[in-house]
Length: 212
Image (cartoon, rainbow, N blue to C red; front, side):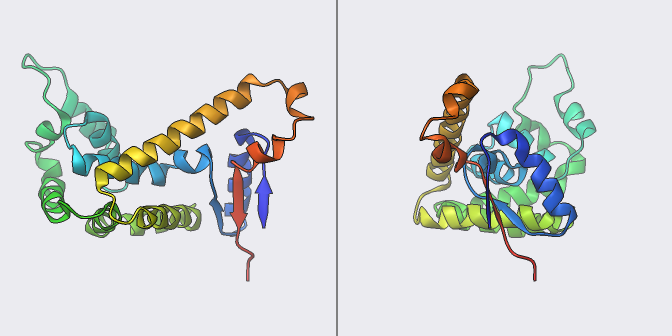
C-alpha cells in the first residue's frame, strides 16, 4: 500500500497513526527519507569516519544512538576556556566519560580504512549497537525499515568509499531541498491543475506493509 502526499507536512501525523496501530511503514523517498533521524545519523557517521575533525558530523554522532552523549556532555566539551577552541574530536579524546567511545571509534576507523561505505557503516552499526537502540524506540519498526533501505542504497554504490557515499547522499538531500523549495514557491492554484502534481507527490510516499 502506498500513501501519496501533496506536501510533507502531513507525513508525521500518518507516521504516528501507523506506529500507534503497529503497522510497519517506510518513508520511501524524497526529502522525508533523507531527513529521518536514523538516516542522518548514519550519513554523519560516514562523514565522521572519513573526517573526525568535522565538528558538525562529530556532534551529530555523539548525540545519536551511536553514542548517546547528553547535552551536558556537549556543553562540557565546548565550554568556553581561555585556550583556543579545539576540534570536538580532539576534546572528546581527553573527556573521560566518553573514553570507551573514543577507543571503539579509533579502532573502527582503522578497520574500515579503504573499505566500501556499505561495509564501513555495517561495522559501525555492529560496534555501537545502533540497531538495538532503534529497536527499543517506539517507532523502531519504521526506523529499522529506513535503515535497511539506506543500507541497500549503499550496497548499490558497490565500491564507493565512505567519502564518496557521503557526498552522493548529500547531493540527494540537496536535490530534495530544491524540490521542496520549488513546491513551496508554487501557489495552490498553480499546483492543482498541473500534471506534475503526482510526480511531486511521489517524492513523499509511505509504503505500508500489510499487517498479518
